[in-house]
Amino acid sequence: MNGDTLQWLTEIQALQHQVMALQQERDAMAATAQRWQKLYETEAQQRRADAAAAQATIAQLHADLAAQSPIKGVWKMGSEGAEALSALPELAELQARCDRAQTLAEAQAELRGLLLTCAKLQHQVAQLSHDLAVEQAAHQQTRNTLTLALGDTIDLLTQERQKYQSLPTTPMPKDPMPEPI
Image (cartoon, rainbow, N blue to C red; front, top):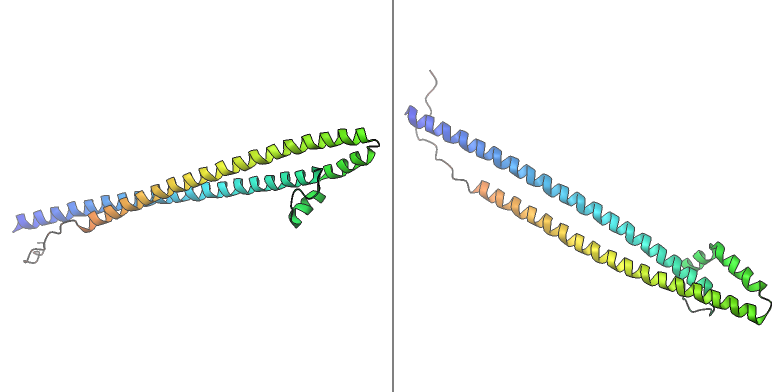
């Protein structure tokens, strides 16, 4: 009887060690999942901030183009664009330069300069639009990668939980444990 009891106690201790090891592994996996989630959230915040900054720069460049456009009405702007235009110090300078042009040749030279500036700004808008699209694609890729990593971690946690739940249980002996002497 003492041999059975000792064996039974040894099995209980082994199972307790197994349970503790599995709990530690589960806790480690949960911490890993939490770190991945934090990384994902940090990356998403950064991407949103970058996208907002790029959008603001694009809007500013559109406003610059509208201010320098020799053909009025080429750029359609809302109230935000008009406010951005009125805040540009360059607008007053451009207006003064146009007012100083006394001859047709001076006006044409000024127009050529403005058209060149407009072309440069259009190139900047195209480049920034492209950069924004690349940034958005990179954000989507990062989001997908982090989501997959988080899903894999959750799958591992689920598998470990199933292993833990499927551990064989040792039946309790029918005889009660003898009282210690």
